[in-house]
Length: 533
Ligand code: SIN
Image (cartoon, rainbow, N blue to C red; front, side, top):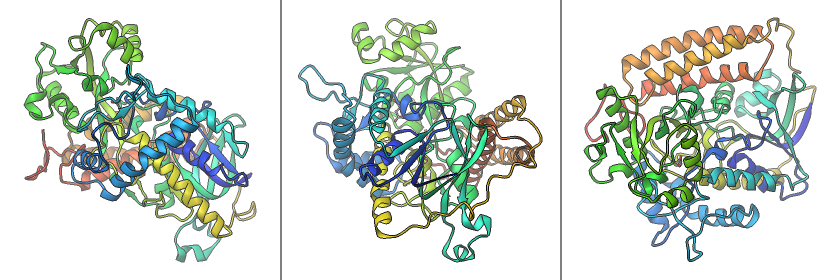
């Protein structure tokens, strides 16, 4: 058993920022948990396009306006303003000054701002097309300098520890549920330990892996969302799963993103015969329309015409040298699978990319469970509304990482939080677990979830599709729960249990929301004034 002041679960920009901000007080003890062997294994690492800030001729008001418009009227204006006001100074302080990230500069040595869809200004800072790699490397290096942060890798949180669930403190039932850490599965030791904490921060990222096609890494199974839901947290906007329009469609390149910045630099979407089609769907913005519109337009083109993919042409709009220098990772990756982007168009399809909803939190990252915070993609600050504006997620993780740390520090200084003792919280009991985890069952069930979500809870939804999805997912959940209660733990089993929970949360939220808005599109319940194609 371990005890700590703060337990942070997740090693993307949101989790690491929270940890390093707290660690500035040397008296604080922080444990940072990652299910992976490597701290870099996160959605942050995969981010290509960049991170939004203020560009030339830009303003807080203009950025807020773009966020709210992309969010299709469902964003929380206060969250948008916080991001637009606090984002640029936090970026300068944490990423540039402390983590020493060198964003690209133009020939005059000034920041080279990129353009992305639905932004009315060029305002995206980037490190070529590997911004996430640079940010992750910088933050991990910074994290390692703090002696008071203990990193536990190969460690998967199983469930949050809450008093009422152990019937230990009846008063908690009146005060509301409070969180006191998590049960953690240590893969190296093959055992579950109690990690008790005064404050727990979920920074586990998203849930793209519940879909058959996604840009997300293996850990994005909705772990934090499912744990919080089981503990009684309020979840909102789960139906707003954003699909990225342009994923490389070639064998051996599954999930590889072609950043929106390619269209920002002039790239144009074409049907397989070479005709541009975005004007039909978004006459004003064309290829730079908000992401939900572009992704759905591609989906409609593919479904109506039986295309397996569409094309993205950048070769006609940038010189080979400029292309290789601005998008070196994309150039290399495409070349590896036989596509030379300096000569030919890139085959692309949409894929699940980002969860705009999540654990409902306030402007300080506090949710409905005491002592529990959520930050980054797992949380819903309301910023993204029904459709996230490109390149706002890294900044959200940074800004709210700082905010969560600030709130925790104030709370810890103001009170003497009760960290439960070994006696309060029972040890993990695995006496009934008789079966070894069967990878074939886990993989098979995971693929079933991914197929259900892709076909019935994807880019275009309907009551019929959603009803079918919910029925099948509920049946699967019963099977998985029985399996879970008899089987020795593994990371895969924990993920499967979380994935089916997260899938149900998304499907049920989609079923109950009959209004098409942003990335939630109901073919059967379109109302006047909804933004369509
Ligand atoms: C991209 O580079 O297109 C993705 C960036 C984002 O998801 O914000």
